[in-house]
View (cartoon, rainbow, N blue to C red):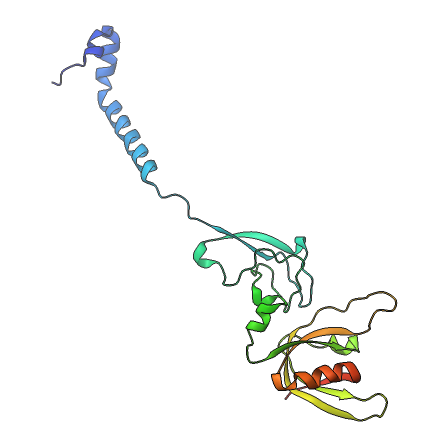
Length: 209
């Protein structure tokens, strides 16, 4: 029989008998507690996360992002979308964004949008007819045409132009320049012609086939 520990030997006989009767359950309990402590000490810490701003609801192209359009979501580092923007509030969307979709650089009007189409020159163009401009969607291919309001006649100034962003019309104030500015991807050789047409003539378009 195992020897009785000195402290237990000094205890009152009734306590000694109670402990000895329950020594096996107590041993099991102590072993279980030791295992639990060991498991807790070696358990992996929770995975690291990165905060990513996503659309709080469906957003249309051309919308100016407000704080309540965005919601913070925790992503694991390896799942963070490339080009996720850390502070998009106040920026203009170049294309629609679905609820829950991360806001990335190519969804916003700016230099990153131009980088996505290096073969084209990014050019803001004012269409004088806001209703006509409102029919455009990001990704459309159009042919730009210019009409001389004085002499009459229409000519094509650029073909297969890519619509990169369609900001909403600004109601503006009295005396504001009418129309809507649309961001277009224009072949570099057509930039001068498109710029001149936007200043001198009434600019319109037809959809490319």
